[in-house]
Length: 559
Image (cartoon, rainbow, N blue to C red):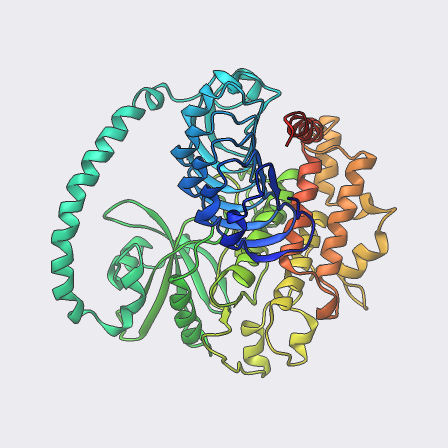
């Protein structure tokens, strides 16, 4: 049964996997399906091909997927699945094609795939797998194995161009596993003992630390003061309308953190704190900066103190990568983003916004999307930060003040805020889409929307619109062109006609998202789908061949 490309939405009904005639294949690809795979998928014991690629499915892969023992083609790419590949899939020994690319899967690459003699095509690309890649079985065939976009993988055959594994790491894997099991067993006993103690202490907890109940850390004002060296200027990472962010190092563990100290003199700062605390319980996404804990108390002067503690992002903000500071020292390393890195960051941000708008229990509006609020981790993965301006629609219908003094902080930053906010319109997800469109244009032109050239009616939107499609090179960030000239060719991106067409498509997405009328703007789900499609086409030409190869294999196996 094929229901692909039908604009289907919502979760997959569990009854779909109980249909007796599904003995050949089930194709649900390229829809808008959400939620996880129903547990009833295990009832499809005679199914030969199962394809749900390019949807918005999420959660863990169910263990009983391994009950579909006659599967020859399992295609799950282009979703939001997370966690490891379940060991139960080791029973699918007849698999010819396995594609789990473009998800959020993690953990080790299963060893049992080596023994799958029938496996002719394996695509693990663009996930978060880690550890050693085997060199036997399907893994010794470069044209059948695809693992790009997994920066923590190592080893494998030389043709995969992965980094060499730390010899100690590979030899100590089993030892670490044994130690981990022992630690877990001992830890269980300790946890049960601590639970009783915590139950008695619960009544003594202060009401201002409610957010810390579900958080990873329990920190005080004094510990934060020491971690940031007294909130010194040297540790200041940046300032915004709702407070300042400092780098901190915890004395106990040496962990590096980012501390956002809220400016309580600003109207709404307290509300932003409470909103972020509320969001702590539900927000979990690989492209959102993780909030570790929230602190509320009194500082050494006796004033109210509120702060949020975030995980630290090693590579700073997108703002720093797109626009080199004019005060940069000569000794500072010049940091430039390649074309493909920009595409990846744009997709990371789109994924995060789609999650905030459509995947959370309550719709969350960011309200202040801009390059300084996009942080990059050690692997150059983009994360949206600063949810102090987020408005949880179903939780609190706050009527924000529309006077000039507060509207700038509550309704975004000049250049990125949508025009309707300036006319008093209510906050909406379409406002975030507008900000994203401006951000996308900035990423690939290298120009801020507040650049001096944008005056007398000229905006970054109009600037790009007037240049398309013939003059796309003229509006592209000169850094990309300089890199091409310096290298003769760009390894990840060459400015031939085909790639210029894709760059035009990216600019078109930015223009549609930043349309003046909210009703004309795209939905973030559509943005994710279009950008991911562009990324696939921008990969090495063998990627196109790879998709044709996968189709051929599927057809040749009768699926």
